[in-house]
Image 1: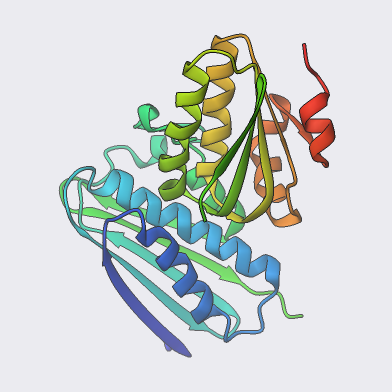
Image 2: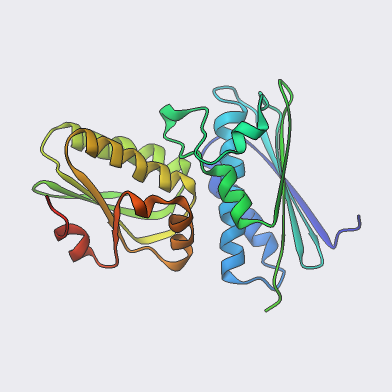
Length: 142
Length: 113
């Protein structure tokens, strides 16, 4: 597919980079005619995906998280990728309120938030190789 | 961008600030729990008026404090959600377990057992 514009950022799995990631994506997406609500939805979804990569992808190991953002017309595609542990059971991980790390007080709402705030969410994962989350959202024209 | 705790007798008001994500939550959770575990707190009130962004980590911290206060016989309320935050709060179902108010006075004074 031919995209109108694309960007890619990479950072280590420090929790302070969660803000960096969502603000970077928001700044990039802002070149579209985007509503405040759509922008807020995208920031929230990116924050969830990146937090998952940081908290669950690598746990206590150091690793890189990659965020790509592609624009095609009014549609934004965001890809969040880690090369960490991978998810054993994606269906289970996507269930509302499920968390593999209850001691961290994760609400278990991460995937549910991504699914609610974006139009489409695809998750692929391989144990020992990492997880990729692809999210798409089409902006309603103002 | 430092979260401030206003302690007034048995009530702690948590003045959240900035962007409430997993990074910030990890820091303030400990601040709040230390005060609660010292013994005299009966109510935690979350002030969201200055929160510009929140993800599900914000839901996690409210749910966690709700469980903690249930264990010690206290309660949790919150106020000051913008329309952006309200979308997340509504979908989370958290309104079924804690009372959300629009103004501080109500969140602090109402529902005291």
